[in-house]
Amino acid sequence: MRRLTLLLRFQPQATPPAGDPPALDVTSGPGTVTVLDGDDENGTGDGAPTEASYVTHVTMTGEETFEETGEIFFDGGSLKVSTAVPGIMRAVEAAGTVLGSVIWQVEGTGRFDGATGLVTSSFAIQMDGSGIVEEQVARLLLP
Image (tube, rainbow, N blue to C red; front, side, top):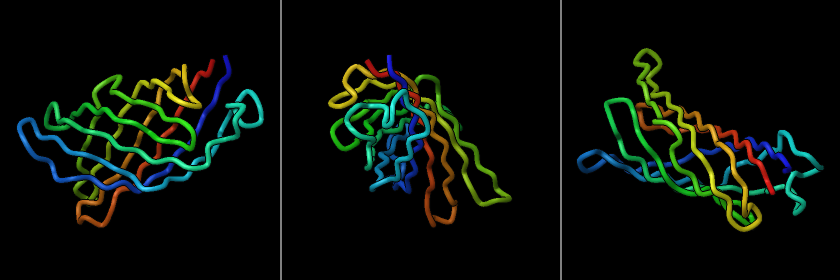
């Protein structure tokens, strides 16, 4: 199996939480893709991905915990993601920020068909509404 490790950076947007339990949708515009490691020059044999975006659905499972499903899209393929362990979000009042993290298991499609692995997402939400910054590390095993 080949290995591929990607660093993805996004500035996503989220809908306001609604319902019981509270749920919200998260979407990103184009994000940056950096290949951190691969068994060959680009890790996929098809050239390294140059663009990424994603959509997910978040359901709060507790005051600070959540589950998330969705899909990360690349040129020529995607990774379907689902929560491997509950994600966490914690407010840091002094910084005016909510910090969060989640680990997703993946199922690849298209150029990533047959890929397995994990994606770790770490994000910061500014409580004043000025934005969200998110970094994801995808560690993939490719057939």
